[in-house]
Length: 230
Image (cartoon, rainbow, N blue to C red; front, top):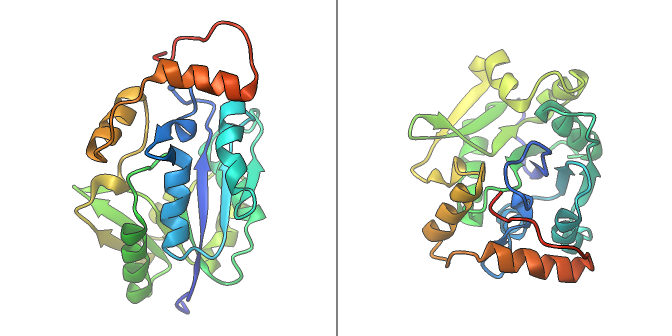
């Protein structure tokens, strides 16, 4: 393969099967949200373009995505199109990478840093293989780097396969990118994961009830706030 000189980022999130009552991407993290942190990690690492493939519209997630609409394309995946493969295809169809590689990641991996993403990108480029995936503690993580020649293969599967299936279909084309940083593994499955990530980042715990109330005020919604621990 010809070595891509640039990369774009496709970030997947807003899944309807989330186990947090507030979409994890909209949860506060430092001076912004989880989504803010993830987008900054890829943008500041040099991503030429950004596409967010998000699930059905949810007001707090819309609020989190709004500040980024000038620098990232937001693609919506309907509730009927369940399955990670459908998010992947929707994002790939919207992303013209212009011959560059694509870094496929998740919108809730808030411990990723620009330095880590850039290090992985450089290692992938130097290896010269079509696929690159980080490996930490014996577990494959994100982002997954995909060369231009394999992107159309994913689209042609119409959501029946995910980016992980590419690793199985092309084992000889995979470069494993070893790292000691568990950020490549840590996503938010539940609120316990979220609070643990805050602690790792040196941030104070979030008062989720107060945050939910502030969201309701910003969104202009009424009625009693639901239990944020659900």
